[in-house]
Image 1 (tube, chains in turn yellow, blue):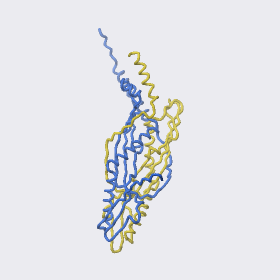
Image 2 (image 1 turned 45 degrees about the vertical axis):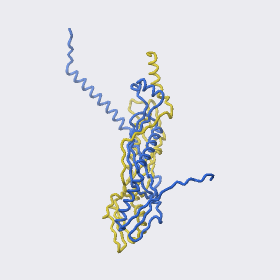
Image 3 (image 1 turned 120 degrees about the vertical axis):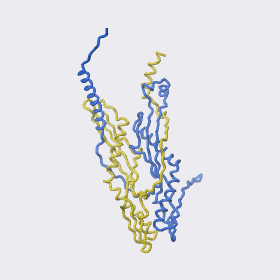
Image 4 (image 1 turned 90 degrees about the vertical axis):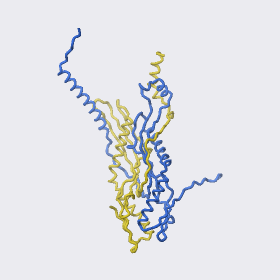
Length: 186
Length: 212
């Protein structure tokens, strides 16, 4: 047995590299789940693309550089949160067939960055540097997501969501017989 | 006879200061390394702008722990011999949190689905559907193990599938129908309709006849 121990130790150290593909079993455990009612009227969807790139030249004592480039697509939906609409914000005058609707301002309802649309386009490692670790790749993608959220106001998505909400509701109110329709946002 | 060694207090103090300095330097180098790994500024390119009309009336939130367990012969051997305590194992553990939104595509409402008669309003909504299943990069944390980018994405996709099926199993579609009916009743009642009838169009799968 004592003779076998070094052999087992060597095998144990070497074999992880020979892990057969598809031999892993996936298991999922649910920790928390929650179901809730919402009332959101989504009126616009933007599909945006972003390149997430980083260059790591390392400390002075490290020889070589590392570069990485991801491309990702995000789908952003914006609209009106109808749960914030109070009955006082709908004013109807039957005689003049008029309605005034005061809607809450548009908000971003959903930011979806599908994992299947996050592609590692390029990775370049020179010298004695190691590849980007799982945690480093993850940290870079998280930064990318935060930048997408930061740049959202510049896209004008909220103005478009409000304009679309008005265009969406107006024909419906006309069909209901209203002749004077005022839709505003507060 | 044991000889007592007296170390001058000054030496002890100097050694403590040097040790503290080294620790500080090491921690600082590690922190600098983490901070330096920053992404470069790039533009956000708008690919498509699409007008939608979605009523999202139910949301589901779930946290999952996903273990991609190494079931190879070697991993079993390492577990059996206890060597995994020395070398570690190759299990991959991800903690994910995700969201599912369900509701209705109101652009599918046709003119005939909406009618008014006196103080009664009738509305037929299209079939309820899952609108989004979202697990973004900030929603998952790599807890243990190592995988390639493609393998990690594959595992997160499995989590998305599970999230979707858990949401359906939890009754998100029924919840979406109930709360949409409630929201629309409140909305139209505030416009003066005493009776608001909301119904749902169901979708049935038609099997093609054999031989066609």
